[in-house]
Image 1 (cartoon, rainbow, N blue to C red):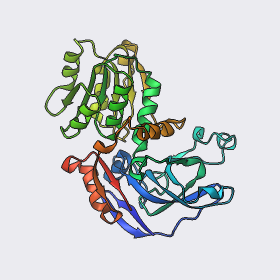
Image 2: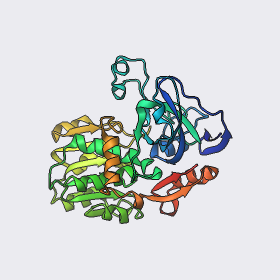
Image 3: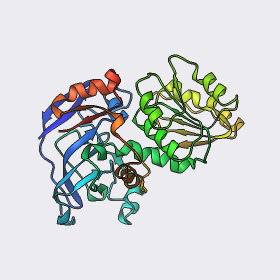
Image 4: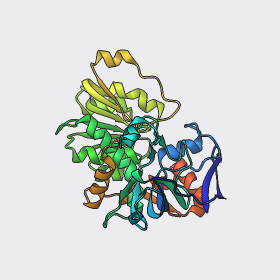
Length: 339
């Protein structure tokens, strides 16, 4: 079968790989759609360490093609979305049917070969049945939405609060929509380009700040009468954005860090203490129903994913897909690959 393989920095090629087999408790999924995540791009550009060669990708959906022992045959042929974190299957949490509390779980595509291929084996516990009304490409975009839900769950946004979302990539845009749905009042977003702001406004942003054109710190203070925002959410994973969070939040406010890369600055403790802040680290989608809820938001039409998908490629064009996703050329927001 064909698989996209990262062989080095900014090097991705198509290779023939053996087809996977389903072991006990596992299934083989025929991939129908996958989307490129910021993690995939940072593996490609070197901002996240990756052992090469590696088949990247963790956001995908498809149909179950075969099942291993201990898996009900009724799964065969069913359309599914797939949670991307693989439990170890060997720890106390896994043995007590709490696989998503597994402390050893690893992200597919980062610590093991991923989904940018024609078929992939995953544990049956990672499957989410895909209902009528949710297309394969939509189910391949649930991860940013689930991460956003995990963030909103932990922040407990109150009606009318002022929220700043730093970065308007897929996770930032998901959070913009979710914060609006959660009742945020003034909803300020930032990015280093204008392209995503059309979507940001459609999703509920009240103010869009291009950080290449304005001083974001001063602009947020001006928009909040010098007080700062109630909540600041950093999604971009860029050092300058991460370093700015504590300047934008009001005293006794909340800050959430989601963006991940090797070159982020250390978190300064004294400003956190001086402002009596609550700081959240968001390490993923939560694994406690957020994926299922994300799919339901899509199914019911409360979250329209169409605006974020700007580019579609086949597996044959994987080099171009990574180039576009990495450079964000042609107004790219979310890149979907359909094998």
